[in-house]
Amino acid sequence: MPAAPQQKIDSLGIALVGVGVLAVAGLSFVLPAMMPWGVVAMAVAAVGMVWIARWDVAVWAWLWVLSYGMFDRPFWLWNIPGFFNLTIPRLVFLWAAGLMGLGLIVRRQAVRCDRSLLWAMSGLLVYIALNTTLAGWVARQSSLPTAPYYRFIEALLFPYVIFFLVYKLAREKQIPMVLVILSLYGWYALYIGYLQYAANMGMPGLRSLIWPDYINKPEWAAGYGIHFDRARGAYTMANPQALLLIILFYADLFLINRIKGLHRWVFIIQAILIPPAIFFTGLRSAYLAWLVGGVVWVSIGRLRRFPKSKLAVAALALVVMVAVFWGNVAGTDRAKGGVAQKAPVVGRMVLAARTWEIFKKYPIFGSGFGHYLEAEYQLKKDPGQLGRLGTGLATPHNLFLVMLAETGIVGLAGILAVLFLLFRLSVRFYRSLPDKAEGFVCRPFVALFWVAMVAYLVDAMLVDPLWDVPSNGLFWSLAGLMAGVAGRLETPAVHIPNQDSPAAT
Image 1 (cartoon, rainbow, N blue to C red):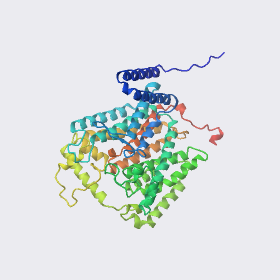
Image 2: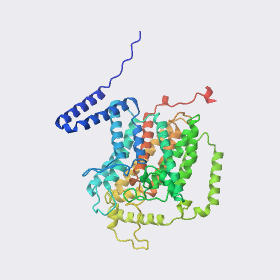
Image 3: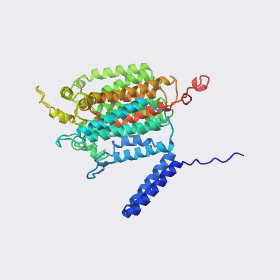
Image 4: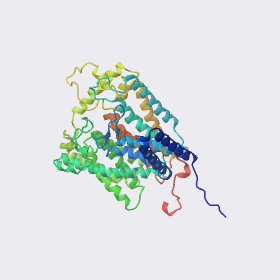
């Protein structure tokens, strides 16, 4: 007679709960006024334990990334004297990191790690932390718009932590889950983008339909918000909106080729709506990233349901549209598709020249992470006719120039090593997959990551992404998913259709 299955009891989980109960009881005994907060903490902890036991904790990484697009600082801010301000995205990060970290402890499932990549990322974080400590975590001149602690903690440390946690928790089933979550938010991003473009083109009353209302304020982000004359989505500038839409466009193409039935039409319609929304951002870098991503996707992703004849027609249609609207394209009005603005190009040339001067002064360790503007102010004034151009940011619009100026050759070598090792891991993963692998662990999935990497790097060549927390979070979360799935890959888990089965005919 078969024995009844026994429920597996995790002793570590029980021990953690017991420690929590004892801690709350002890705190309530010493400080009775804290008892209600202790009860709330235990309730939250209980929800976390149930989530770990029944659901996928990695979903919180994506909820953290997307929380910047709906509930950023103006929505809710808790200003704590002598401590970091708390916002909903920061609270979501703490919850996500805690829940995912606890999930790692409780589940304790092994994954093959790329130690070279993890050591490079850890070494870069430690180096930048030491560099910032020596230079100062806050600006030495309070009048300068720079925040080294913010750039390190929220734009580097948070994404790298999420990368590691997603890396360790990644599963094949998370791929469609993540892409569907991005698609759901994508409808919200498209809704805002289309309304913003219509408002900029002469229908300002449509802004009343946008929620939250703080998005409609030109100065949101403590006075440093830019791109209000473009469809910047819910962000302080158009770059995060553009990056998200570019990645989502190719994610939709990926899902269209992997999902059958009526659900495909949801992604088809969304993919059709995305290119105009990318155009609405008015970013030349976004146009370039979208087109280069298309080259990567078509040449490497190997689309099965999008033959090259259709691609040729699409390319011809694009050429014809550019020819017909050449007057707009060759103009300077971004809302009409103009790409001929010279001031941003000249500004970047000036910043590049100033960066070279800073590098010659601080070649090895840089001027200090987050202290570019201070070092730039110590240089002689620009002797040319250009003068000192305001850029809206406190650094040059280029990740690699920023790292060179602020962290020197050591920091630049570190970020290049991290990106190279991440790409090398993805190449190994791609080569390990059969060409006809079915399911979501397949070569087109790796190609989707390469599209995201191309879009991120194109953006990073023309803007400082260390001020752009949502884009960093999105890219490194996707990188963690790709790397984690690669680390768990086993040959039997990759589904190849049987050549003798009806599905293969």
